[in-house]
Amino acid sequence: MRKLTSLLLLLASLLGAFAVAAAEPKLTIPETVFDFGFVPQNAKVSHIFWMHSTGTDSLKIVKVSPG
Amino acid sequence: MEIIFNTGHYSKRQTKRPAITTNEGPETKYVQIVCDVYTNPDSTYPISIMPYKFDISQYGEKERSSLEFNVKNLSDQDLDMTLVDMPAGMFKITLPKKIKAGQTGKGKIELLKDQIKKEFEKSVTFQVNDKLNSRFTVPVKRTIRIPGANPTDTTTAKK
Image 1 (cartoon, rainbow over the protein chains, first blue to last red):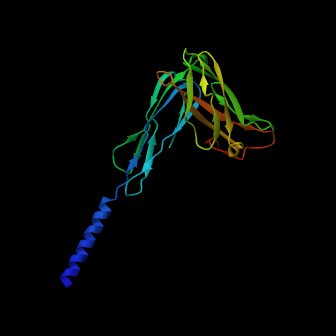
Image 2: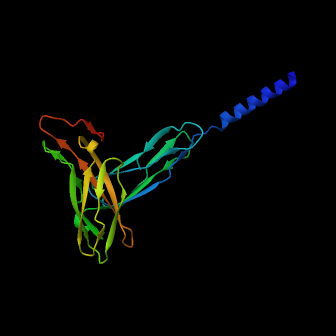
Image 3: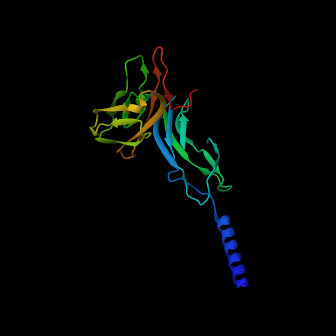
């Protein structure tokens, strides 16, 4: 009985460790290119790109660098 | 994520590719914007939008919340115009349904009620059904100057 309990505990801890290791953040951007077409000079134009966190851990945006 | 591009003194075809770094891993992800910056408002084809910048600013007590614009079809075929992109919850846009070759259609942009007290700089993108499915992006700006009063809110980072 003791052996069975130890085995179950070991199995549970291994599964827990695996679950922690498998948690990964993932960024999914459905639309990555946007064409404004003709745009006048000296003007500000804008577009919203949707970003989805599709991983199993929290996604953190560390940095955005202008292109 | 909102990408704002100031066309400044750029001209012709421009491509910008902002990079996004996350805790996902070392791989950087990118979004890309493309545009054709024109210098002469009369030079666009197959349509010309006038005014080419929508300024719905209010200078004074009288409320101003809409702007009419003209779309001239410079091509030799009838064109349909559709709205491709605009910020959510800010405007109502009415477009001319079909513009016959050589003719001019009328459109209107109206601010939604909760935007009337705000200042902003956004843009709207249209597309016509010519062979190239040409697109046109028009900047939309609102500034409020009322003597003795200040706007209650702004959506831009002008502070």
